Image (cartoon, rainbow, N blue to C red; front, side, top):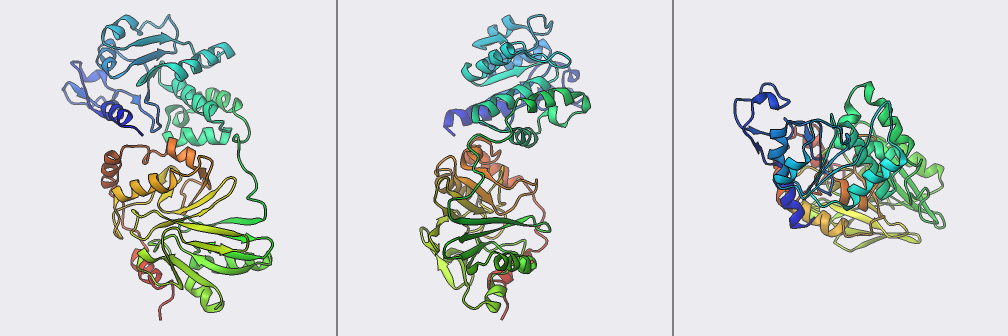
Length: 430
């Protein structure tokens, strides 16, 4: 993200100084003062690149106070809206003020209205304000624009709306018709979605519901050589049963870092299967049969995974890259779907995490599939392109990201005192 975008975003989160009564704000308990947050005024700035904000009906004094923050302002209520004041907005500094009708239930937008509204989002300068009566229809319009622009399916559109906490997605059943209208316009599958892995690659994603951990099985269908990434001790029998059922020969157990929320099964598997080699980054300080450095490769049959250093969650975090069409990257806790690992223990460093994700993961081809170490919302895969655009943490500027991580105040991981000592010795105490 460029410095200009970062500056614009910083400007949009500053308090709004305005001489109005507290009743102007949505929060009736607001103090008798002339300063309000945008959230108090029911104004949303979704965590996506593009500098687009959403609002409902505003009083004229609030609109005038907001105007200097935006280069463009679009009202979708139509020219008959009595609260819309285009001349005042222009006098206050908005360069482009337009009306693009985008009606809601029971009358839905015509195709011509949809295209006109989308054209405004494509072409108008930023920062841009979208305004309707309640903020609902402009939320739908923004999701529709993002989905059309990037070829997202109905499922992906739902995830976008949920991740951004758009008002139309969390409000009562009266918003159902506009939600249904939006989803009906989306294709069943994302454009370009790969439904099968690379030719000759056997791949399975496995899940531990107690710790929300993903484990990955990769194997070569010709040689039957296999590896596991981030296996969980309590799921050892499940993983080995699957490997046996598929007729595979496990060669390696890889960990992306020294985990704090579960104990790896790597050491226990090695005790039962002495030919299996355990793998972790040398920088982790943990024990394993193979301590890898950046750019090392672990080969299984005709395939190999490359070690990408992605420290920040811990000093020893790595991601494993399987190059192909598309490539697959297994990011552990460095990059999650619409999130990232915490940085407040185990040598965590927010600046280092931001730098490593941007340098090592966001530099990969846009269609690279991102497979995280955890997910807490039943999501299983993303892409580099999606995370670069929509990750609400890592689309921020570096300074904003560092401050956000410092403000999280997360609870202490409940298994950390047990998991870390065991994982430092590959899950097996002598």
